Length: 324
Image (cartoon, rainbow, N blue to C red):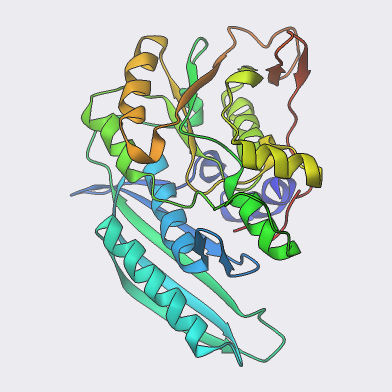
């Protein structure tokens, strides 16, 4: 996907390459400073433990705005429905979206619906776009990351991907494994309200923690050093990954983010995040290297419990397709 975006989409649609660096576009208009983002949701199956494609579409879009430091204002929603998709399932999805929108204090202000031939649409796809208002002077961007920055993660990783996989494969786990799909604007606004100065935030969606860290390392031109024991992974996710042969560092989340902050802000930011119910498991997991740790190009370096280091590469291909 990264290669496709870099080699095909960007040269045609964004020659400057600015659009590739972040989750949304930052728009400076005459009367307001806005963020604008869009995404499409094709998760299979559309219902999974802890959520469905409707809540995923709302929260996923709101979270992209939050990573830009923008308070969500409104969304658009486009639905592509396959002929024969059950009305009861559509009603269930719309009800979930309604409740998710209400929890975020926003609404869908425009939308579109298309129906495609049976067998051509895999049930339901949803496209959403969102507009948010930036009410502060901070600029959060991978290019703002600096040597010495502390890296925080907002909670345990890998829940969403493993919850979807459990339904897709028909596996039954002894514990209740649910997706972490949720809105991130609450904890992000808490950081802003506390006056904490951050350099970059990134949510952990496709490709999980590893892909997010690698993207930021490449965009900033700096290597990152991560302490593996400090990265929170629930026992349910760890066990499921061991059984199925997945690495939790590459499994998608839908309610988690990493934050890059100056060292003097790290402890206070952790306290703020841990005071929020949705990010009570926040942890300091590493730092940005002063140099590229002896490598000619930026790397993500993972150090395990006995001090052995390895390179945490960008995922090649997609470990678990149709995850969002």
